Image (cartoon, rainbow, N blue to C red; front, top):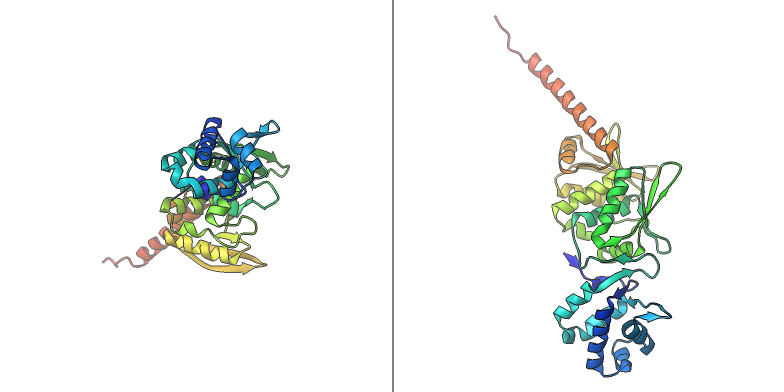
Length: 315
């Protein structure tokens, strides 16, 4: 599975390499004869075509091309431009951005479905946020998770991030709004008060599922006397239970206490979970290992007592 630039939401804006932009404009002029006709066929304005395709700037500032215009170019002129030209269109994007926010520089396109992508998505469903009016962020006190998240962002290209350090040791990493806007659009997901998992994850590979589960449990998992995942949304946890089951990890019913919903991993799946999903959160990984050792010791003790009690009488 992969997503091309023309699969992006309309609020994304791109900036082409100058030579490609000039070539694109020449080809469109050759097809349409005039700038007015280009604008008419693309349902745009003559001024937009002039500054974004012909000049490439406005008042000595870069003139980005809206994704709506790019989609119309592909839709209206794609057949005449040819497949090779459309491939070069993606390769010639120097950077893209949302209507506001930082650029994603030297973008890697098309975006391919892989475990790192789902790690980002499920971290945003856990300890992240991407509301409409604010910069998206991911927060955690575990520096290993923050570093992992920043590294995974680079699947989109050269992605800038900024870390804010709070007095309570919480680390908050901010990143370009274009990334969260694209993920929300292509996966039909919501990162503000989420109530559903992306449907696509259930068709993804086991490697992607493992990465998604790991990210979510790294954020929302709790290991003490039991091993559970907590969330405000019961529906989201029910779907997460289904996701766990799809790779053979057993869990109980979704329980509720003070409007907080919990999903418990069954003890018989502890070892399988640890084998398949190596948590990045150091403390949680160590606690799970301790729980498995305690369970093995208890089972071994019971097994010894059983065999001792059943020992045959000797004469």
